[in-house]
Image 1 (tube, rainbow, N blue to C red):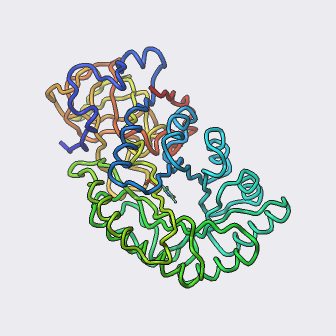
Image 2 (image 1 turned 180 degrees about the horizontal axis):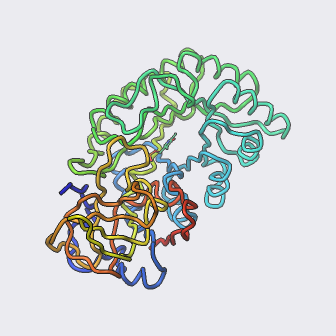
Image 3 (image 1 turned 45 degrees about the vertical axis):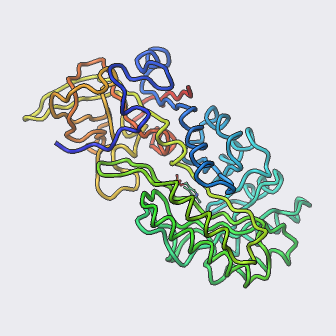
Amino acid sequence: MKPMGPIPPAFAGQRGALTIGGHDAAALVAEHGAPLFVYDAALVAAQVTRFRTAVPGVDLHYAIKANPLPALLERIAPLVDGLDVASGGELAHALAVKPGAGISFAGPGKRDEELAAAIAAGATINLESAGEAYRALAAGDRLGIVPRVAVRVNPDMELRGSGMKMGGRPSPFGIDAEQAAAVVRAVIAGGADWRGFHIYAGSQALDAGAVIETQAATLALAARLAEEAGAVPPLVNLGGGFGVPYFAGDEALDVAAVGAALGERLAARADVLRDSRFAIELGRWLVAEAGVYLTRVVDVKDSRGERFVVVDGGLHHQLAASGNFGTVVRRNYPLAVASRMGAAAEGEVSVVGCLCTPLDRLGDRVALPEIAVGETIAIFLAGAYGATASPTAFLGHPAPAEVVV
Ligand SMILES: *Cc1c(COP(=O)(O)O)cnc(C)c1O
């Protein structure tokens, strides 16, 4: 038997039939079909409230690549101060729900058309290189619009314990800290509206101490660069990296501790940052726990002493749960039989998807209650990096349905 991660708090205490936002999971499947992603907007709103309480006075941005579903964006946009996008396509989604002034655009390889679209919309471009800075200035000249730009810094430190390290090394992301001040001076001299710094040091951190340490180093770096550039950044985007517990042994990030420490650091910040605003940008922490992937059992088979529960979904919809999206060791996401929440386990099964690849394993030797063909399996933590971070075209199965409740 292999352990599963913890079922998120909103669902962990449920007994009997699983409900999501007050809706019976089986009824949702009957209405929308399966496989189905269900997102509970009230849980996202509760996370926003948790952030506001813990980290007062700091802007909250939503990094929409975690989940760009338009129906969900509509619900999140009014709750947050900004949307961070990473492509022209995401920019279009964001502009449908937020004015351009509330949007920032990061990511390497922005094409000239994407830069132009961002400038025309009044969005802030987080510059990833000196070359991109010159292309943004040129695009602004062509359009006759002053471009809003911030300098994304490739920091000289990284977020300790982070699932995905983004700093402290050669990187396609951001301008090396050693060159950042020179680029700030160049864009200001070139007539751009310089909006400040964007410093992103990592992702999926659960250790409050590591986040606190990184935020302190980020603040110090922003102050040093502002001094060097001789300019006050209107906004310092401190990055994000708040993680969620996916696996056995993971514990929720202590956001209150992070907020308290950041509050103290901000109160004592360097004079050059006295008039700056600050922002934190979060993806998965806001949406991951609000989503559940529901998939139906098509077959139950025994093979050489192991029982396989074969479902109609798989890694083509929820790649991350199969362990093939940026994890080194495959571990089990939390899952449950939707009709029997809280029931005692009856045996060990492997839950496998319908794709012809041994990689398509959603639960590896997990302990679950008795399962029959036709029943629904719920895979939790499906609100971030699910449908749009999975190879949905692989093997030609239909795309999953997605619904916000
Ligand atoms: C992906 C990304 C995020 C969101 O990361 P999460 O781990 O989902 O919070 C935020 N900012 C940038 C620059 C990113 O690339």
